[in-house]
Image 1 (cartoon, rainbow, N blue to C red):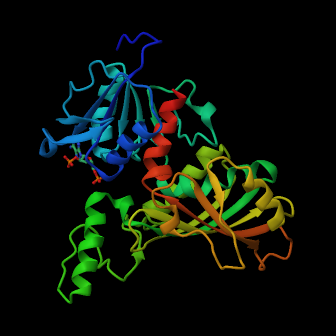
Image 2: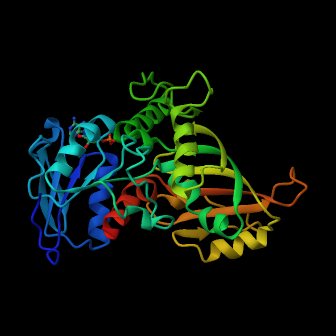
Image 3: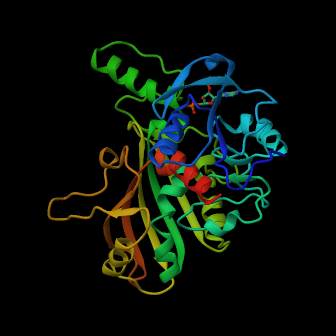
Length: 340
Ligand code: A2P
């Protein structure tokens, strides 16, 4: 175990530091002045020796190895499920607490799945690993939580408009390159995502479960919402779509509460909700957009209106947009580390 004195700032490691989320983890630690005594950066052998800026200095990226975690107190993982499965237990053995951005441990009943605005108490008694939820789950349910507390949400349906960043830095590059090629009339062969990306959209690039017909992303949203809300009864359906946007996800959401609820009730709740910003201006037809969410912490919420298909008055539709790399990944992970 690492023998950190409780009063000395922790040694923090980022695993996957060169990736799309890794770079944002470094920014978030710096921007939020996260108290740390040393930052260590890990990636694959391909990146060993590269340097990345942090607090005015250059930090050298190290190859991730089995013995990398000696002396590390907090390890923020964002290098894919396989890397987390192999290395997170080694980090815990070496005395670190892991905040894992992959799906590897999210549904393990012993591992807390945490959105700090929703269930910060869940980190108590963690087994050394705390899971950072799926980006769509975080962005869609953070604004819904205070509504759920005021008037229980019984059913939730959503369609997502998901950015390239969720598939990593290489997918973002594929969007840029294929768009450039399209505009220049050049042929482009996609290698990262399964379909042509420029001026196109397609069903999320995860495996489809033959029994339910849902893809893995949709099933994550369903299962993770239940776990984070600690509500096994909430009914959730999702359709997840990849759109040609660089780094912010958007979602069209309709939810049904247990009692009647008005758009004014929802606006009043969301005006005070942590991590959320109302962008709801029918006069100007101005609502949440990925362009406004990108690079910013809050989740934007607007288009708040009655679901006219539910005469009981218990259903509301709204639209959200949130930065996938920030609140959808790095920011949420750093907020969890702050709780530690
Ligand atoms: P590298 O850049 O050396 O490949 P993204 O999600 O943007 O694709 O980024 C994935 C991150 O995970 C990168 O930092 C990548 O490092 C890192 N990574 C991928 N595979 C491994 C591995 N086997 N060991 C350590 N880091 C890995």
